[in-house]
Image 1 (cartoon, one colour):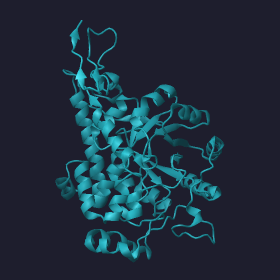
Image 2 (image 1 turned 90 degrees about the vertical axis):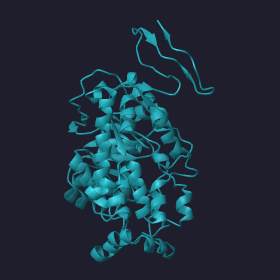
Image 3 (image 1 turned 135 degrees about the vertical axis):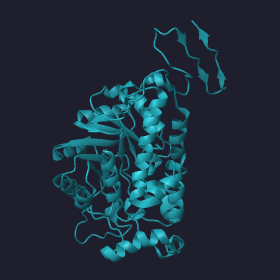
Image 4 (image 1 turned 120 degrees about the horizontal axis):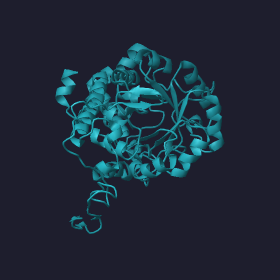
Length: 416
């Protein structure tokens, strides 16, 4: 931990280290979105354009970033979100991320497309673990995986519904990566250039498990090919709200729907019995023309009106990013790439360091803003594009100026 902490002082440093350590095809796969990366970049652009307005002369000597989420106290408004290439980034990377989450007292979400058996991740990773299900065209096989997660004891099921058709990711196509992930002969020059990753990940899998990573948490029927390109790996594109009701009947614990952008869909999900929703554009990985989740978050929060927790993800790299989401009404933030960068940079130590960096930045930024707990952060702490300082309510003695983004001209502040 001391080594990685000295090399990386923020998530961007971890990204740079991961880029050096991982083969190009592997890093490109985790670091890019779909098509032209427009949505991927837009997620960051929106976060960068939102400003935080600090308040002064408040006692911030005792700052508490903890939250209550689904009946449990969490140390931070963070969740390590589901990421599909975890097994390839580091040997049994799912366990490493689960351990990092457990140490920080935040949840970890295991996705169904990883290579370590879910029961092993639960046992060795510890802590609070959730399970994400992606629905394949063979729906019964998917349901069997959900039942297995239920019986294994996962606290929460996240049902992802915003990726029901194949991805269009040019970087994977140019690098000749196919799903399920397999190394081709043309890829082996890269591992030669990255011996640390080669010997710590694929070689270690071969020595200890006699095979490269396989998606063991997805039940493929007997006689059906697991190979890339097999018809089995087509996603279910015929899902309806009735399917969500079917999952609600099947899953006895907390159920979260991931993939929401429109407020009407959030309300429909609540009618179907979900316990929480995730506002997301899949990190820019599905719809390259999608708005940022933060642009849609206020409308979803207003529609939900506190009936269920509203979570958000996509593009978060700083503690200040997390506080922006909280100020806009999110109950917690899922981070995916940020912790993957840590895992790629330094294995389990890097995963711990990524969470530590974000936690420390959250606590520090709370002090900068002049708040001691997250419930004190709200709209008055935000400057959004279009309003340079929406600082106050009607009773305040002054009004902030308006920002015309088209002309970049400011209206003067006038005292009242």
